[in-house]
Image (cartoon, rainbow, N blue to C red; front, side, top):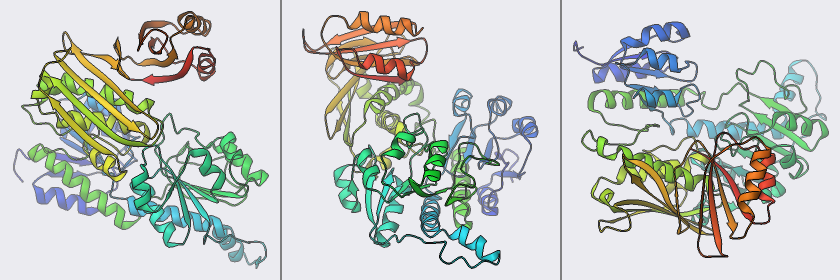
Amino acid sequence: MAADAPKVLISDKLSPRALEVFERRGVEVDFEPGLPAEELVARIKDYDGLAVRSASKVTADVLKSGEGRLQVVGRAGIGVDNIDLEAATEAGVVVMNTPFGNSITTAEHAIAMMMACARQIPAADASTQAGKWEKSRFMGAELYGKTLGLIGVGNIGSIVADRAQGLKMKVAAYDPFLSDERAKAMGVEKVAFDALLAKADFITIHTPLTESTRNLLDADALARCKDGVRIVNCARGGIVDEQALADALESGKVAGAAFDVFVDEPARENVLFGKPNMVCTPHLGAATEEAQENVAVQVAEQMADYLLTGAVTNALNMPSITAEDAPRLKPYMKLACQLGSFAGQVTETGLKSVTVEFEGAVAKLNVKPLVQAALAELMKPFSDAVNMVNAPVFAKDRGIDVSETVHERPGDYNTLIRITVETERFTRSIAGTLFGGGLPRIVSIKDIAIEAELTAHMLYITNKDEPGLIGGLGTLLGDAGVNIATFHLGRAAQGGDAIALIATDGEVEPSVLEKIRALPQVIQAKPLAF
């Protein structure tokens, strides 16, 4: 091993194949699974890379201790809940994951959990091994001919759909990014959320935990489900309201449930434990030898590539950018991310196409990373697996057309980026530029001129251009103790469509939002975060 070879620490249990990859590539590696948190903080300063699964917590303290040497953190798996992504970005540490290495294994576990729930296999096994023979107690349900409701049709969800169709189930799918063409190619029925609840005999969840999906299946949603529905969650804890589900199991509204994930893990206690026909496993979705070997090899190869050649694969906090392009693209990258995030947060129906246009000075640069950055942020509210590298594949898998247009001619601004999103219900564009010092600014929404800086807490309002809006909003926010930092208005024409962007000093509570939406001038009110 060369004296100047990069050095990697593996602090979780990874397949031995990962060590073989590092050693074959000329990377020095120390294998220390189960390393206590305080030792990780003390020792990380001696390493260029850190490879983890979910046990090690890569906190701000760990990243701060590694400053000056630590270059990359590799997560063998999808979720990065155990990694402080913001602190890593601030420290200049690339965070990579392996979003596709355990997809088949997780999909198979979801199917197994559905079968176990349908036939009450765990309870029947325990009863039989206890010397009982309660044949009449365990009456199950066939999967044949039943409707499976998929919430989320990404990589794992699409595999579950395929396996369910092999069992001769009908598949209905809800996913804001699923196009009609993609649904047709998959052989699934694309439905709205309420329609899925009304028709599904089984519901299985394959979406990340975000603010828009937290408690997606709450008491109200469960009440709208078919009587006797069965629910499977092998995605993330918190998407289903656990107390509401426990109540529904007790009442018989929900005939059974099978969960591999919980709000608090390790789940030593949970309100769902012991409920009728409740099947629980300890987050085993990726727990097969094949999946663990796949993700271990992939993360080792990716980290070695980065440390030895600078190549970036499946990075969560940076796109593929050359050393020459990086300083020139940096301010445009922030602008593209903000525009994409805005578009993603206000898109609620099936996405058909995304067009990213560049005018003026930015059109002369390498715009590919800007397209990827904007696309990743646009889709981030709906998938924690998407990043700047895999965003184009993510869009293609969902039948979303992505295009870029470059206009070197000057326009109203020296430089401009515009994102146009086409959904099943509307076409909406948002444009931005850079002001002095490279500061991003929104300059147009829905072709309505408006100039605004995007901040941590924003309210986006579409409204009728009628008197009383400003006073009504100010009163409601003031009564709620929410201070307005900036207030920006725009309109298409007098008395026509209008918009408002309001920056606040804190979050606006849902109850206040409902009051804002009830104002006679307001058409839509959406909280945004940047």
